Length: 229
Image 1 (cartoon, rainbow, N blue to C red):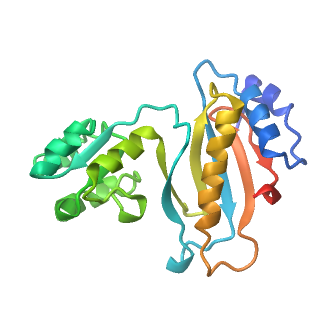
Image 2: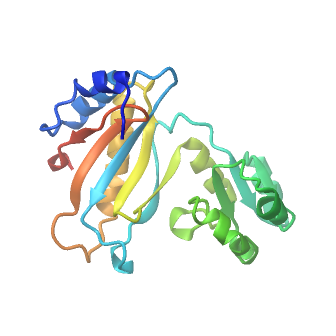
């Protein structure tokens, strides 16, 4: 992968042989986030899990105390009173069957999170091939299949993020924006790491956290000392 001049300059400030304390890593990542836009700060957690085994899967959600810094658009599949409840709670889009062809045939995907009441999952299931690969399929573990649509929407709007293992057994999650104060990023990072530690599958043998790297959208990765968790 070829990197530009800005990236190379930023990378010189990071000592790749050092495992940084979380606070130092945050300060360094903020310093090396030099793009013209407000970069997202991301955490990449390489685990010792083997995601091919169901009992070693990690999946869940956590509300970041200081939000993600991003405006999240929520689509809710519901019917009856739950439609009005979702609208009142601030969902961006609300509907039922009529939304299926829009997504299937017109490629409409102008939303970031999908919430569904359990009685709508039969309909939403038809969208599995479209929503699944994009990580948008509602899931009970992530709290996005629920009758309490108000709580689901409030949590998402407040900064709730989902985490799950990818095919290479790494969890990728945002912890805020480069414009956030260091303390707020640290609180968000701690909330994520707390959730990941609690989600450790009992079937995992050996080292659970192989490496934890903090990075901005365009900047170099900074390795964090996992002993801190």
